[in-house]
Structures are given as structure tokens and as C-alpha cells.
Image 1: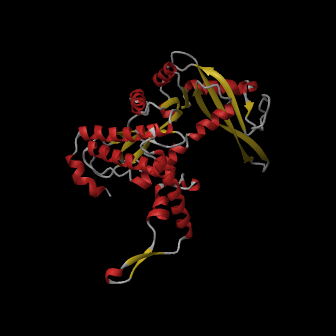
Image 2: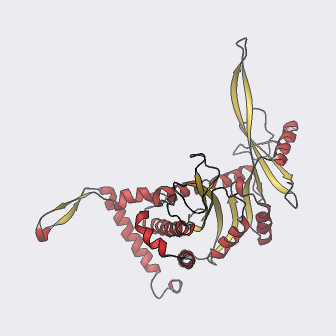
Length: 366
């Protein structure tokens, strides 16, 4: 609860923030040494934190739920797949996604253990920063960014609608390219475009989704009308349009992780007046989040490893029971719960296996 930390946070300084970041980095390093080297993708996003009060650094920005309320934006970077939180930063609510994005990427890179080798980064359209694309190209990283539908993209869409041969169907089992017909639900066009802020042309894949509607004229004549919605992805990968779209859509897991941070760890609670205090508390929650992620991966049954912390608390921690007996013979009698018995047995087996990996004669445990 935030009130528990209020007094502590008032005594903390920027040096404590550095220590918290270092603690998270050290925990990542120790886990990585047990796993060995691996290629990773980094997923990046931000989320609006609505504020109620007079918090330092609060500004009015885009707020889909509470229009006109001051807010912060929390920018986060996760390891795709395993879900570790690498970096977190608190910004005023009107901060543009591209603001200091390259600096954030470099900080993420510095915080990673040497065993984690970046293969690529993925982010939404608010982060399609050409400076980050150039940096990724210099480092040999792949990138997948959604592009905002600005003038260049709109012109490309208009041109391709005039030349239908550009559109390819996205049928899953096609062995050869087939051009999309008007009734194709999904189609894609793979082209090179240059935006005004770019120094060169880059690969852009534009996706077209057909939406069929019905219109009725004054003479009660019903006609089917096909409309299209579009989205554009800029990338330096060589993936075909369908695998590329699937790869980008995997980024949607970050939304679930952000929801877990909000609902399970109260990251959206930022009632401290000093922005530093709110940032400090966010990092405390980030460390707690990573510890539970590793707890689930290490000890939980396979079917529970994707559960949010609220479910873990309900199923494993908040177990109903009664206090029975009297005097020296008082004890807790748990309710009959076969599912929990199976979970505990699985945890015991996994804990023994994990302890074997941490034996002193194992050089990886040093």
C-alpha cells in the first residue's frame, strides 16, 4: 500500500534511485548467468497514469479515459517472451513518444546483462523515430515499428489503390504470391517509402483490412459496400508480410504486462508530490514485478506461468482457512483444496531442481 511507503520515500534521494536501478540490473544479471547467452527482442510502450492531486511534473496530455486530467506517462521496456522489465521511466503526461527515445534505447542497452544479445526492437507508431532506426541499423538490430498514417503513407495508399496489382493476399497457406481481389479480407503491399525526416528509403508494408457494410438507398435498394482500414509497418526485416504482421502483433503482450503492473502492483498510484518519489516507488514496484515473473517461471506449473499476480495471490497466497483449537493447540486448518496440493507438489519438485543448479560446484552459480 502506498501509505506504507510514504514516510520512507520522503527520505530518499536521486542516489537511492540509482541504487534501485542497479538492484534490478543485478537481478537480471544473475538470472541471465544461469540461462546463458540468448537473442532477445525488446518491446517498448508507454501508458497514461491519471493523477488526482498536485503532483510535480503533471501535465495535461492525451488521456483516453479522464479527458482534461493531469497525468504522467510511464515508458517501459520488456524482454519479449519472458517478460522481464528492463527499464522504466516516468515522464510528464504531454511527452511525445519520440522525445528522448534514442536515449531511452541506449539506457536499455546499458542495463541488459552481457548474456542478452539484442536481436530487434518493436514499438507502436508513437515511437517510429528515424534516429532510433538509424541507431538500430548501425548496431545490426532488426526493428518493427508501426507508422502513423501521415502524408507520405496516405499518398502511398492512394497510389496503390489506383494500381491494384500491388496488393497481395495474406492467405496463410499460399505457396506462391497471389494478387488480392476486391473481396479479400486481408491484403498487404510491400513497398519502399521515404518520409521527410528520413535520410533514405525504408521498407514499408501496408496492410488493408476489408470491412463490408450495407447501404440502403431511398428506393429501398440494398447494396453491399466494401470499405478498407489500413495500417503501416516500417521494418528492416526480411519477413514476408504475414509473418511480419504476426511478429508485430506479438507486441500486444506488452499491453497485458502493463495491465498487470497497474492492477497487480499499483503502478498507476502516484500520489506523492515530488516526481522523484513517484519514480522511486515505480522502481520498487518494477523490482517486485520481476521477482514474481521469475517466481512463476521457476516454480509455477506450466499452465500458471502466464497468470497475472492477482490470480497468483488468489490461488496460491490467499488460501482460506480457519483458526481451530485452543491455548497451545491452536493451529490453522486449511480448506480442502486439491488444486493447491498439486501446485505445491509441483513447486517442491521445481525448487529441488532449481537448487541443484545453484550448488557451489556449479561455476554458473558463482
